[in-house]
Amino acid sequence: MSKNPAPETPAPQPLHERRERVERYDFRGMRPGVRFGTASDRYAGWIGQVYPARYATKTSSSKRTLGGETFREEKVPVESVRDYFEHFEVLEVDFTFYRPLLKENGEPSSNYRALERYAQFAPAEARFLVKAPQMYFARTLRRGGDFADNPDFLDAEGCRTRFLEPLGEVLGKRAVGVIYQQEYQRKAGSPPPGENVEALATFFDRLAGEGPQAHVELRSGHLLTPGYFDFLAEAGLGFVFSHWTWLPMIRRQWRMAGERFTAANGEAVCRLLTPRDTKYADAYAQAHPFDAPVPSLSDTPQARDMVDDAAALLFQAEAHGTILNLALNNRAWGNAPDLGCAIAHRALDAEKQRTGS
Image (tube, rainbow, N blue to C red; front, side, top):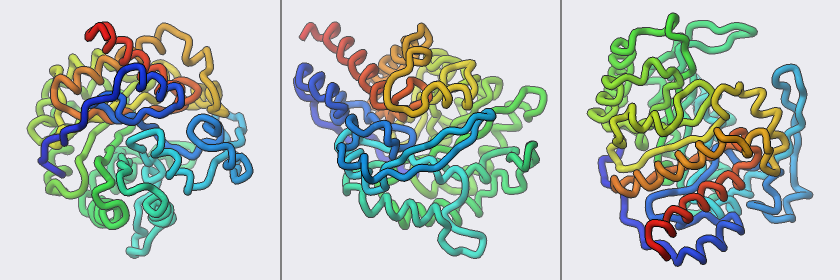
């Protein structure tokens, strides 16, 4: 992973100009210490916000069943990534979470081909966060209707050869970070925190810093101990601030982390995913078809806290000389671009109060 400090960024435009651009869903250069982006893209519900109207005749559809309910997902083509980066500065690619970029025999997988298309259509200045395959970082995987131990858990060599190396081939320096996400584990069924840290240390030592900056997201609050955060800081691994079902609020995560950012390259990741205490399927059902804010998600005290926390973390990043990559998900609000507006306006309000401008 890179050991370089975060690059300097130009001063932002006047506040009123940035407000006008937010109303057009243009978040580029909103503040010097933040990159606005989303967790996944290509949602047809964003036509008229992020994607031009011409995509309305170019969508494809598929069915998805969650919680016993079937939904139709409408997507715009991959070429839309060109339009995406006219609004955002970073994109989290999450389809890589489900399978590596190379098959066992070394041939490119369908994910490799999909990533190639993103690389083909994305502008040269595009930046990507890419999720590592779960097969290398999940203790258990769903097999049929149940979960079973994962034989490839923390297989550093497999992660290097089937994911990190081909990732470099396809995206090169446009891949600015890799997110290693570990599933939620009940306290009774997970290893002690110290043992967990030792296992992670061995895995990342074997990777020897290869690939883009690594950011780690553990979804089990009991594993987020002072020793864990010290390990991340010493190893130069980024802590992912995540607003997710069973994790503490981001403001508490900041305190648990010792009010510090830990990535060696001077960047950080914050993911706003699902409301706390809300399951994935329930949040998805409320947010679908992702074309507008949904009051049951966006008009709640928890939603306001989430926006406040994200804006506060943005200013903390600036104060620490860190670039914060914000990955916004439809499930957290109903519509990710509109969630970006809420955070941007909250940050601009705070800027106005601080500067009196």
